[in-house]
Each structure stands twice: as structure tokens, then as C-alpha cells.
Image 1 (tube, rainbow, N blue to C red):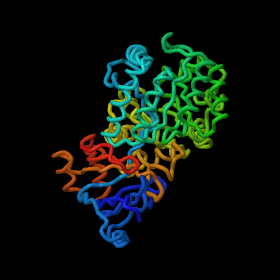
Image 2: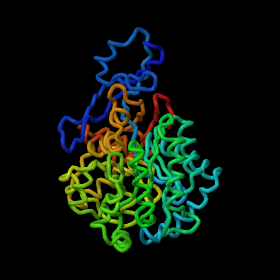
Image 3: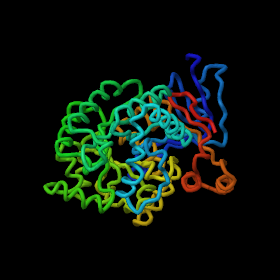
Image 4: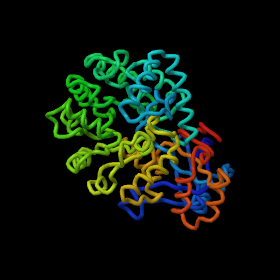
Length: 432
């Protein structure tokens, strides 16, 4: 073995499947060993078994009392909204007008975009998020700044330029043709460059004309391994508005479907006000719902229906949705996800919440086998969770008597302080 072999001894947590549908999904080694070589997972398992296979003299980093877990995957977040997180508003549409659009205007300046991208990525890593599906602004330079910052850190990120040619301030509009032309140029520049991936990003149906939607669908067909990301059925006022703008569509989701924007690698944020026909269509096309509990509560948008989504087997993943979302922490987001589910009559075990934040995100991105797990060959994107990170968390952890209780305590009481370290492609990129 080459000297680049790294060995970490700690408890290991990862998933082989969704725990809601597979009682053997959770993979747990209370005394585990994680082996990393050349930025990839080489092996993960019980310490006693794997340690015996190591070459003599291999250094083992002992992280006793800590839990190693795949890095979190945030499937819906807006980097230009970093500076407006926690802004007051009576609902989604006034929040966009009063805070979001003015903040996004500044991203026509490459220096500003680069400075925010640097802060944003550092904040993700501080919170244990190693991959994310990121919205930039309408300005191509905002995308260049983001990908340049991500590529320099060798992070695996998905991002794209917003397409918006109506119902937005003049300073944030493109045209149907220019938006798609600029998107195609960005695909050429960044898609699959290192660990970067491009997302065709329709802001949401109300801010794109029929012509822009049509061209976006054609672009998605031309580049089938790119991503598609947008918003759907977040808020009842928005749903009503879409009905006025697209009177011929059966539903809000059907607007996107009609333009060929539902397929694998399509990410739909919110998905609150869908019906069963919509959910069946999401499952059939493997379009993924990205659940945004903190922003849904913050903006009063509504509660996601887990029971109906699970009955239809809609692919689900977890997202912070900063800046409508109120925290970069996926642990804090789990806390709110649990409450949203309870309010809707569903009980979400902690193991499922950790699945949604790791392998669930990888599956939504069609990157299972690349990120989100400790399967050999996966990128070595992982985090070190500290159950003793705060006095209260340490006290609660001392009295837990099962894995579920320990993970639940982390989900409900944890935040950025519970992330002791973050690794991307085997390199430590954050240490508390």
C-alpha cells in the first residue's frame, strides 16, 4: 500500500438504504476503522477486523468518543442570500422583493461574488456540509466566482445561473435567449471540471416566460448529465400566481413537466402543495424533492406531507434553503424537519434524518457510489461528529442507551459546534 493510506478509528455511521423502507439500512460500527487512500474510501468496518489488514507501522488517528459520518449534502441553498439570512417579512413574495432581489443585484460585481462565495463555502464546511446544490444569481460572473472558489478547494458542488426573464426587477432579468446561451457557456466552462457540476436553474416558473422555459427544457435534453433545479409549490400565493400565468397546466409541477424539466438529476425545492398525481409523476421521473423545513416555517409556507410522499416513493433529500432557511447547519435543519413531520402526523426517526442528509442527498443527485456513503471507491468526504460538543449535549449523550437516542440528541441539540472536523477528498478542510 502507498504511504498515502490514512486510518481513522472512531464509531462509524453510514447508510446502505432508506431506513424507512429497509430495517438493515443503517450501518453502524461502534468501534470502527475508516481507511482512506488517494482521496477515496478504501474500506470501512469494525476496528478489530480491519486493523489486522494494515501494513506494519500504519499510523492510526484515534478519534475515540467521536462518530465519523459521510459529509452532509445540502440539496437546495442560495449563496447570494448569505447576507440576508434572518430578514423579517410577512411571506415569500414580499421577502423576495424587499431583501432577495436587492441583495442579488450586487453579484454583478465579481469581487463581491468571490468574497461571498469564500465565506459561504467556509460556513458550509464549518457545519459539516461537503456538497450542495447551489443557486447563484442571474449574472454569469456569480457562477464563475462560485465555481472558482469551490474548484480551488476541491469540493464537489452543483451550481447554476438563475434564468429569469420576467416578473423580476430589470436589473435581475436576462432574456430567454441570453439566459440559455450564458447557461450553455457556463456548462462548457464548468460542468464536470474537477468535482464541479452544472445545474440548469429556472428560478421558478413565475420569473420565466414560456419561451425561456421551452429553451431551458431543450438545453436539459441536450445535456442530460447536467442538473435541473427550481422551486415548486412552496406557498399558496405562489401556487395561485402560477395558475394565472400558466392557465393550461394541470398543476404547478405540470408546468415544468410540460417543458421537459422532470427527469433524473432534477431537484424540486419545497413540494408542499402537490397532489397525488404530482407525487406519482415525481416518482416516475425520479425527480427529487428537496425538503426545506427551516424556510417553510420561517416564511409560513406550510408543512411537507411525508405520508403521501412516502406512499408514492418520491425521492427525498434535505436542504437548508439559506437565506429563507435560518441555519447553515444540517443538524439544526433536522431539528426543524422532525417538528414539521410531527405537526403533520409523521414520526421521523433520527436514523432517517441522517440518511436524508447523506445518502438521500447523494441519491437525489444521482451520485450514489460517489458521495454520501463509506462504500469503497466513494469520495472521502466525511465529518467528525462530537457528542460532547456542548455541556448539554455531553450530559444528554452520557445517558443515551441506543444509537437512535444518540443520533436524536445530535439532531435536536447539535449545531456547528458538534462538527469537530470536516474532510473533503481525504483532506481536512475544517477543524473546530
